[in-house]
Amino acid sequence: MKPSSAGFIAYDLRPSKQAERRILLDFLKCANEAGITISDCRYVGMGGTKFYDFHLMYRFLGLKNTVSLERDPGIHKRAEFNCPYKFVKVEQKTVAEFLAYDLIKTPTIYWLDYDDGVSQEITADIISLGTKITVGGFAFVTVYANPPGVLNGQNTGERLEYFHKNFGDFSIGLTIEDMENVNFPTTVYRILMAAFKNAFAARSDGKFHVFFRIQYQDTSPMITVGGCFCTEEHRRVIEKRIKTDLPFLLTGCPYKIRNLTLTERERSLFDVAVTDRRANSRHAKSLRALGFRPKDFETYRDLIRFLPRYHESII
Image (cartoon, rainbow, N blue to C red; front, side, top):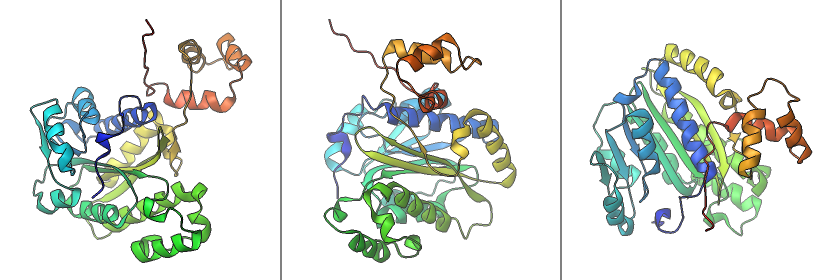
């Protein structure tokens, strides 16, 4: 079993990951406004030793019925020690072990935030989610977007053979070109989408709608796919809210969170420029004079509410 990344990755300063978390919260707010009462949901995630997502789920959405899964026995004691709230239950279980014995029917928000590359275990977990999620529940899966370690050193033909052998029908349509490193995030996305489609194919009480597709990179490239298992009426209202609040999620492909390395002075200019209806405001002109391009304005406009601010003291 691969050790938990909580033991060697500093999660404190990951601006793209933090932006993803905040976007996910806003997506859940959209669902809440569509009539799915998020505060009544249970949250099952992977809090590690920092529990960032649990802090946010409680502070912004009021979730108190929560479970954190920590598969690594070497980290479990630290996870229990650092657990921030009494209502968070820390389980020393893999996702598969937890889902196999979880009988609670409360609508649940699952965020399976793996640091592993895509694997049979992960697709099997997604299939299990298809039997567990009740109407009004959510599922999000995050995985490493580059080739997993087992494929390091293999050529594209060998990689394709590995995918056909290990992912079966989920790999239908993949080609040698899809095995190139530059195309791998899209390949991972296609595997996750196929797994979600298969997981809910037999359900007749609702439909799983994929609304959330995010690709980001701090230290490693990652991709998240997820959505809501709901009625058609809820789908329509959720999509309407997303069009207003998070339109960049509705392109039909993963939204890439670009890293904008900005100073505080530059961010102050961007804050005014992208909220000014005048395209040629003096703030926008100042930014263009510094070398910023239209794509930078577009990105900042998308992410203005979600990018964290970090401050370091030099004295």
